[in-house]
Image 1 (cartoon, rainbow, N blue to C red):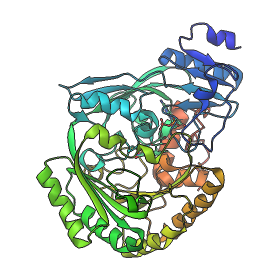
Image 2 (image 1 turned 60 degrees about the vertical axis):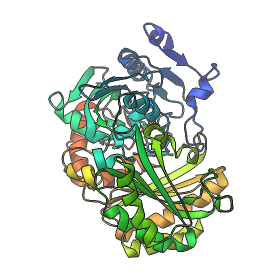
Image 3 (image 1 turned 90 degrees about the horizontal axis):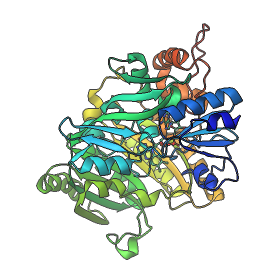
Image 4 (image 1 turned 180 degrees about the vertical axis):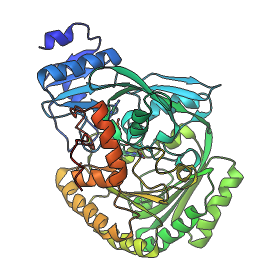
Length: 464
Ligand SMILES: Cc1cc2nc3c(=O)[nH]c(=O)nc-3n(C[C@H](O)[C@H](O)[C@H](O)COP(=O)(O)OP(=O)(O)OC[C@H]3O[C@@H](n4cnc5c(N)ncnc54)[C@H](O)[C@@H]3O)c2cc1C
């Protein structure tokens, strides 16, 4: 049946044993070793439609791959069909309209490079090899979420191939229900081939302040970091992160790899304004060491890449906090010494600002807009045995923090496993029911099931 697909397919079809097959099936998470039956490297919407028709003829499970950076490996289903968008990486910027058209195989680095040529940017994530597609469809949290909102809050339109092969445009005035669902509902509703984003003036030079405190002072450091980020204006980005100090030149040799808590403050305006952001943290609790510098925005976006090398073993869970209370901080500080891998880390993203100006109902994004922090727990290890230990460490911390969580929600993009009850909880009953109705309209057969799956609504009431 592959011969029928070959007729008119413009991209590359890779079968097990073909040159390039192993590279094409590899994903970020080294835990995933899936062998798809077929990888269809698509050059445009017509190839995507043809691949979907092939899946229908053969009954193959469908996975959709943007950057291949998801923890779950859902993009490359075992013995299934991969609709691989990675050849589609063109980003076109209209600097006057402040818009970018971004093909769905682009990485964050591709999008940043194109937009920064014009001193513009849109919120993306913090590891530059991540795919724009998966990140955006789940939400998109990064350095700019306080200044510009989530990636989805800046989406203007999307070109989508539906499960039945139709090619449509979704925007506020075209397929508005699909448009709502795409902004947070993940890959459930179709294959997006192009995103259109609104852009904002950013950089090209921004300001970074990184203050590190040793883990023994984690409780005090987290309180200081909380107080500082709770007072930030919109024109600053931040991350509070428990991690081992990297082996970078700015880290004094004796502190390299030391377990630390860091406050990373990004100023989007002047060096003077940024110095005023950093000073209170330094004065409240003198750091073990610090690094304050101006930095190109594109370098900021790549600064953490070494913490997440391709092929590393990884697991992740997350929750939202209305505040980083003293009680929650005490739980975190008590858990920190329990990790086994020096690569495991806890990145905490301060929200607020533009993120909080969008209402909960405006998009399908499941996180509460009133939450002040998105708390991510990452087990990262060089081998599977160490990962198993830190997976337990992550699960233990996640359980211990439940009493302080804003809601039962967690960020779908930080899920390493898609347990049905967790996916439902990520959206909450009302949003999940609305998504399920839209799913029933656009993908009644649940062709796009390899993801944080929304089950198509039936006439039966949704189970809770
Ligand atoms: C180390 C690391 C750091 C991260 N940092 C951040 C961060 O700072 N901020 C943040 O918000 N997230 C972050 N993430 C999470 C990231 O957003 C998700 O893993 C996201 O799914 C990755 O997208 P991708 O396209 O690379 O992934 P893929 O594995 O290619 O795709 C993931 C899923 O997205 C869907 N999908 C992908 N492309 C399409 C498409 N074109 N059309 C329809 N559906 C599609 C599919 O369901 C697919 O299974 C991080 C993840 C990792 C591993």
